[in-house]
Length: 351
Ligand SMILES: Nc1ncnc2c1ncn2[C@@H]1O[C@H](COP(=O)(O)OP(=O)(O)OP(=O)(O)O)[C@@H](O)[C@H]1O
Image (cartoon, rainbow, N blue to C red; front, side, top):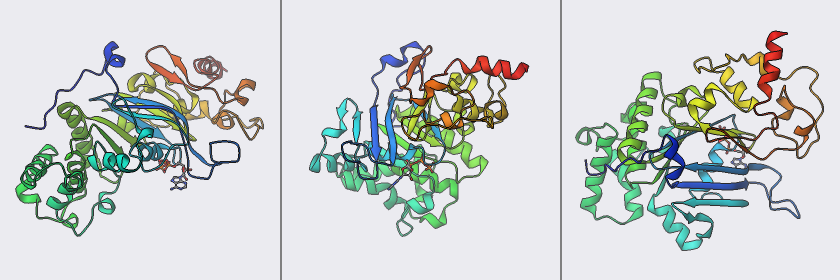
């Protein structure tokens, strides 16, 4: 298999010694125009988000709708400009790319996106051959013969037989086959980083498992760095190495996925895990233990911790949004009561 690349070791204590493919530092994005005297818009889609993804690593991003997950992907491929912060790809500052350099970066296909609904993202008039070849045509670095070889190679990598697939159009494919064509299209340029936005939520359970194990195989065989955006934790639990939890434009917690799921540090992550019956966690959390109590206090309209109004464990200090703090085990949580709320939980359990 010509496309096979060595997968660097990304788990264990050496994890942080492998240079990240993607390093996002204090990234803020706003779609609304900035307020006078500040660089942030009124409707911040992403606020001071930091995240790293290493070669061969799968990082899951979870969070409720509108929390900024897709905005991170869009900013990374240069579709939306950051209001503040830095995005580095393989050490290169993406913010320094402008005009032609930015267009060339986009054309190169170094970062690729895979969307939730391939029926909408794949042009219905193109054949599979044309769909998978299109990013290579845009990149313009390979000869026609080399592109055809790459198309066949990409289809085989996602488990599709080129001979029977090349002439078909999207409507002649099953949902699972369409998503695999999307993946073949995305990997055809040999990207360094793949952003998959809800890649399995439109699929049935068997196709879901198939696409997830395919992503797992691609990161192993190609050394691809993969970010999977998902609403539910359970689809990530089996394959992600790390997880970042988004809430209202902020990364509220991140770390190795098994540690985060088994012992969440942020009360919002606690609520998420407690609400996902298939996710095993040490404390056997129940959603009612983490939901706000009826006498929840009134919070100021600005600067307050984004989760405080929903947090059962919030106290006076939570009137200020905390910056993420480093926790043992390569973890981070942006919470004044990280580690403390479990004590209250025990009290709650006993009372
Ligand atoms: N093009 C846009 N113009 C204005 N606001 C936008 C635009 N795209 C997203 N937003 C807003 O930015 C915020 C973050 O949106 P984003 O799509 O990143 O969230 P998400 O976590 O990916 O949500 P979902 O899970 O529903 O896809 C939301 O409040 C959304 O309404």
